[in-house]
Amino acid sequence: MAPIQNYRIRECLKGFAIIILLLASWEAAALIIQNNYILPQLSAIFDVLIHPFEPVLGGDSLISDTYVSLAEVMSGFLCAAALAIPVGLLIGWSKEVRSYLNPVIQILRPVPPIAWMPFAIAWFGIGSNSILFIIMVGAFFPILINTTDGVNSVRRQWIDVSRMLHATQFEIIKTVVVPGALPGIWTGLRVSFGVAWMCVVAAEMLPGASAGLGFIIMYAYNLGQLQVIGAGVIIIGLIGLCADMIFRMGQKRFFAWQGSE
Amino acid sequence: MKPVLSLENIKKTYTEDGVTCNTLSGVSFDVFQSEILCIMGPSGCGKSTLLRIIEKLDSEYNGSVCKHQIKDGKSPKNAMIFQEHALFPWLTVFDNIIYGLRLKAEDVSEDEAVSRVNSLLSITRLDKFSDSYPRQLSGGMKQRVSVARALAIRPDILLMDEPFSALDPFTRRELQDEILRIRTEMDMTIVLVTHNPEEAVYLADRVIMLSERPSSVSKIIQVCLPYPRNPADPGFLAVREEISGMVRKQNTENSV
Image (cartoon, rainbow over all chains, first blue to last red; front, side):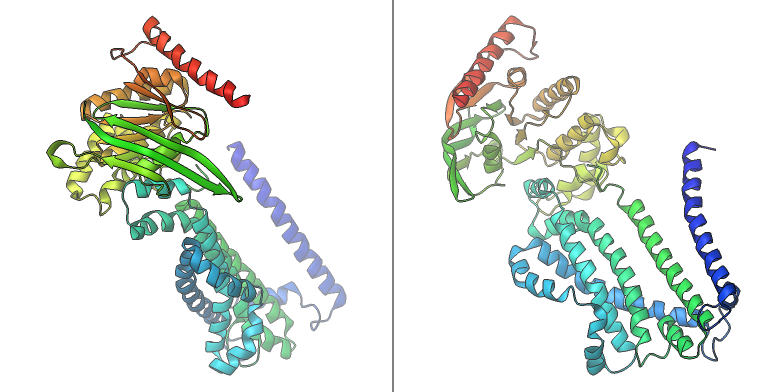
């Protein structure tokens, strides 16, 4: 086997060792405490996980809750991207637009998305529209900021070349600025998907939600079914990990040119 | 000889941190058809700025850049090659070269564009690298791609801003020879900025020396040596020494 592969496997094993250590400590603690309302045993959690299609606590199945959350994230995320990418390009390209928009962005950006929940409920009522709004707010800023940074990272010389070959303003944006900013935009999408995923779980925990992973976690808490919470947390973590891996793979695949200059 | 381009009294000042800086203080010269004109001068004298002004990348200056009509009454077309190749790293070699031809400004059909690019690929000996990305090429090959990209739009005047300064001597000579060949094949006028006296004497019909900032034309040297030139030839060495001497003198004046 090639040494480089050996190295990778060893690095992977290190990570797995810690996970196994954590799981073992959890199980040991659960066995000592013997109280399902504080620390459920791993076997109870896995029992929930390996039956994803069965109704949980008399409601929907884990799969259907996962689907609800994912669908909400996807629609909120896509709406945010459709809004944030053009605005980000505009801010990055035009100093004028930046002067107008920068202050309001800098004020709104640090606000945790969940802080908008009461307003969201007041404007859109209880339910999925409010959750969608929260996801959009959360996903919007990372895309916006990274798109702007991406435009600013476009090298002056590329634009000079394009102008030298008599490109119009629109052609410069289309053929140089957008492709040059794409790695930044992609980073924004990756970060923002992570934020959106956190937002959906948090938003579903608030009153008014009736489905989704956040909802099932809160519902299980109210019924004292901590093994369901454990299962929910693991699913949330795994989906976040998968999404991030997909984005990273995309980055390697499409933007190998980045930093190669 | 017929001038294709006349620069008249070009003046340029720029302001940085509230300090006004005078870079060009009235530069005038003609560029003649089919010649290779080298612009030399101490660093910071505004050589590159001059090229950017000719190429219309810089419009904040006083004076005039006048293009004269050439054959069949057309105004000559420029293209520029930059010091750093500035290839688009997300495009293949082929797509980099065809880039200018796919813009609206060039009224060229796709078939015509493709055949032009293919012939440029063979002229610049890049045929095998058509589908490669810039990151997969050596420095010399990258600069050849950027030469091909500029040539694709069939310029009458090729502006080159220290195009070979980042290359090793062997590759540099190879590309210089290529430029000489292309100039004869395509009947082009070339304006080249360089800080390398040997390069100037190897390529140029005329060398324009700029003075230090605020700069103007301090001397124009005719290089009356036949091509291909031999850098070991006594005549060659004499001209090179003359130019080196002038550069040295300006540098010492600079430091006093």
